[in-house]
Amino acid sequence: MNFINSPIDFFEYQGRTLFVKRDDLLNQQFNGNKARKLFYYLNNDFPEIDTLISYGGNQSNLMYSLSCLAQLKSWSFTYYTPKVSTQALNMDEGNLSMSLKNGMNLVPIEKHFNAFAQNLINDVVSNQLLISQGASQQQAEEGIKQLADEINAWASNKGFSRLAIIIPSGTGTSAAYLQKNLPEHNVYTTNCIGNTEFFNLQIQNLVADKQFPKLLVNKKFRFATPNQELFTTITKISQASNIEFDLIYDPVMWHLLLENLDQIPEPILYIHCGGINGNSTMLKRYKYLLSQKYPKNHIG
Ligand SMILES: *Cc1c(COP(=O)(O)O)cnc(C)c1O
Image 1 (cartoon, rainbow, N blue to C red):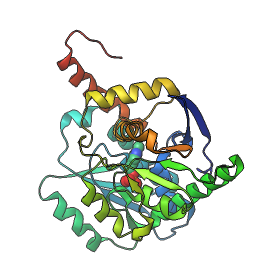
Image 2 (image 1 turned 90 degrees about the vertical axis):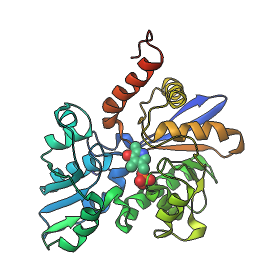
Image 3 (image 1 turned 135 degrees about the horizontal axis):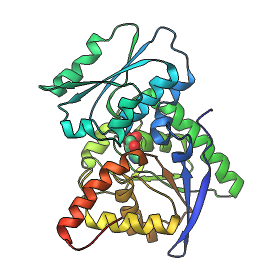
Image 4 (image 1 turned 90 degrees about the horizontal axis):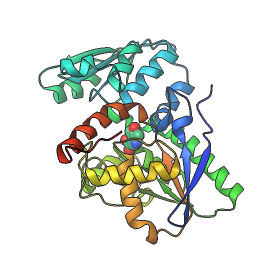
């Protein structure tokens, strides 16, 4: 198992051929852009480390990937999160449930979570490895560079001199490092979390201004919030492609891509960032929203 070299599929949509880099298929458990961002840790030895530490939301895709990394490395894994509901703890699917099954030690911090998280760095001792929220850090570049190399090899094989590479952003780390390592191609992304200023602030510590990806600005959709328009878009795309996409980031990215498709003449390569383990919990929230709106309609 080496967690690299994912396949590239394609499908036809509105007269365009859309290519999809299937990073969701890198491995059944450890996949997507989180596997790329954590590749440095997987690929190097840390003989002094026996404990992984991180923090953030209790349905996070990164949390689940960290629980897989800890298993692969035989590390114990402690994860701090704000207060967790009993309902969330009792769920038998989704990222939290799967991370707990991987042996994650979940520690709820009831008060002043942000201050607590910021302070963690001061308490790390030599056998512990702390990975920041969203893994928005320099170590993420190694795996994203590997992804860039795979894309370059494929593009020259196909004779594509300039691609439009499409990837949704949370912290923007993946999109920024991808554009940095693919200067001949255009990387397009959208801000799924926060506004344009937030996006720029996050990546300005990682790359130079001229390496910024092109932002298709999202002004309308709030992070991880079920929305009828987004559901329609992702359903259309899933049907046309026969590929399951994530229900948090991908609907926003596909929506903005389709809105801007006519302005993007280059061949399109969409990066599938994984995350489908979280779909069961998100789909429950969608069913609730759509049943409120259409009481007689049954979905799925
Ligand atoms: C984490 C994640 C992203 C965002 O990645 P960033 O590097 O934080 O921008 C996009 N899609 C999926 C499925 C993710 O899990």
